[in-house]
Length: 250
Image (cartoon, one colour):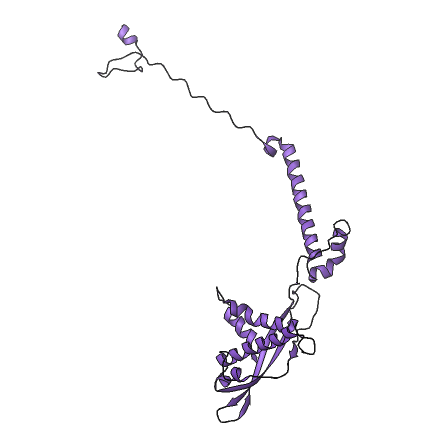
């Protein structure tokens, strides 16, 4: 009877006979949970209050940064409509004596155009139509992932150089004015010989350059109204040197 009284669920020997019960291993202790810090350590009521306070601070900081930015930015549609509110917010408590943008971003599209007087092979003179060189550069840049530095800047900087060294009467101011004329003239002659069929069929005698300035239109939601008609600045005819006329700048 003693053999039958042993626990049949106990461990057994290798031959199937009942053996002695093995001691059970104690469960492994669980590591303590890390203490909560920051807002998570607060009670739910105080967590809601802290979240609201942070939201108010974030909104106030965003509004302040926007107001300071608008006070430093060039005149635009927003500042024209809400300029008084911007000034009331920024001045005099946070007076600034410097500008964020120097120089101001252009709010005009300036295109450089050229035409030429060409001596044809039969001896006759022919005047070409106006060629929009800026439009050609824009077409070459549009959709180009890696446009060249020449397409982006050569003509634009040549015109900026000319405009900054000449007065409203197109007279040069000093030696840099004469240099800017020569630089701009050589660029347009090179472009005409390269791209204009009439110029390639003869010898260019002189060229005339003009700029076409068009205002950038305001957004549709703005009440501002500005002219969309181009304003032209037409320079006098420039005769070419013998090297330029012979294509020495190509």
